[in-house]
Amino acid sequence: MGTFWMDRLVKELPVGVDRLRQDRILEEALANGADPLHLAHVFSLGAKASLRYTSAVTESEVERTPNTP
Image (cartoon, rainbow, N blue to C red; front, side, top):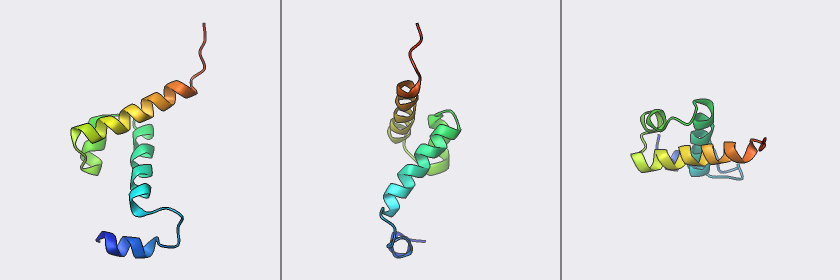
């Protein structure tokens, strides 16, 4: 299915197909421990793209973790 048809299916949503895909990739990164190889394989991403997603997830997890002395 091409993006034309996907855009028609989600035209009533407040976000586009690209944003939905990005969100899905981030959710997968969170669920699988931010493994860049897994993301690259599942979503056909290049090395740099998969590393960007995994670094975004790990930075987010660090921000949510409370600092304990």
